[in-house]
Image (cartoon, rainbow, N blue to C red; front, side, top):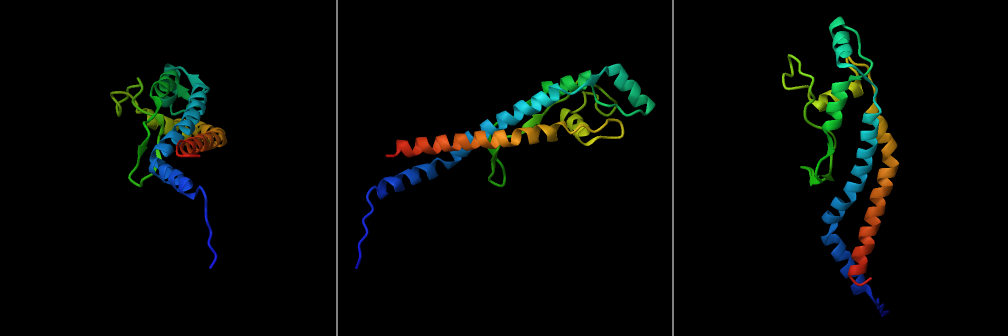
Length: 170
């Protein structure tokens, strides 16, 4: 009967076990670089949005005209409420971070006496409404960031794996 002897196989097994034990840590480390790139692109797209004065936006709304873009206060609210959530595991077990808009702007209305919700303002601009023309600034930012974010996440994963393998006898 033939006998095969694998030298160094125990080191390889130890490396794989260490990598498996730190897989959640690796996933969390990998998510952030991708989210950061998307956040940079989305913030730049938001900053690039044209604006109209608050008075002009209100006048257009009252007269039934469609606004071409956001008011100055709506854009300021989006920028103030922009951010990345902490990295977490969702109900399905996926490790993720969200990039987007939170909070309220300073435009008070009958329906929103504390200010308009920033996520709703962004969604209204992204999809378009009867009073606001569509501007797919979020979709454009996501498409612009996708390849760069995936590459950054891959590089982070490769570096993490190489470091773990080295730490455990490689």
